[in-house]
Length: 165
Image (tube, rainbow, N blue to C red):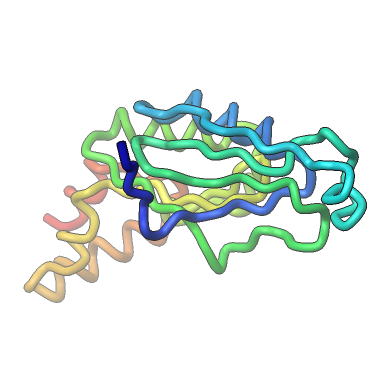
């Protein structure tokens, strides 16, 4: 049986916390799992400056989508230049992802539905209603929605609806 690989597969570069991050993320998202774990060989460990036998990479799924986590060392850090958006139908979903992903994260990096988790990864927790309100054909309604959103950290669906009118 041939398994078709997901064409685009994001890879998270961690210093040495890939296992911890993958365990954290797979507890938060439904339909998630941890797949193949690859460990550094003696030769690979020498090149990468990592301990032989330590975790090099982990294949995992979040909500049915494939990702890879790599323990690549301290060379690169996460930034807000790339974020993962989570589209939420209900306020309960917004609350769940906001609270769980924000545990131990940077509270100063929270605005307009964006947050940074304890590993430095940026997330956008976005109600599915928001793009419709912001793209409304009535420019005044879209402006009121944007003004309300800019005042929020965690997005509030009812407050956004009320602002739109």
